[in-house]
Length: 196
Image 1 (cartoon, rainbow, N blue to C red):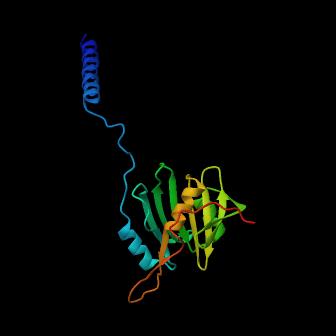
Image 2 (cartoon, rainbow, N blue to C red; image 1 turned 90 degrees about the vertical axis):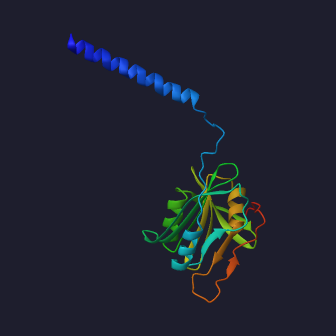
Image 3 (cartoon, helix red, strand yellow; image 1 turned 45 degrees about the vertical axis):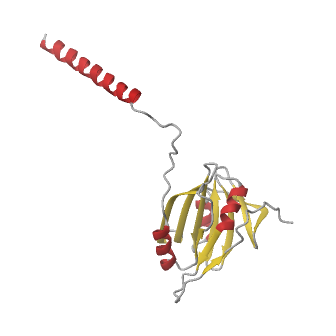
């Protein structure tokens, strides 16, 4: 008899808890339209990376507030060398990341672009020509410079990738009295142009 009472009490207790949880869910207001993306600041990490990196670290300037930074890391001694990462959600909630490394270019591009492959097309961004990569998950714009590979990659369109590439500015990692910012390309949104 006592075992039956214990089981019955446990079932009643669970039923009461279920009613309380259901009431809380129903009566506590939920804002379904609230943006789940939590933007982050990255100024401290950017300044740190620019002091430590053996290459000029790129970050966007002048993007609208509808571009939201969501992730930032700098690893000075990773498998791909010194690696800078800055991730964003674009105005249409597509992912765009700026990735840089002084390691082996082919391995790094393959890793950050999720195995995108090089096409025979290029994209002009300001005065700079970027190589186009296309993949099953991410597409990418790639620029190989002296001692650094820069990749703008993600789920966004090539137009959006070009917009990010156009906004990138780099600051020399070499110490100087007044660090100067140099524009890597025009801020004007890029237009996709096939190579001839």
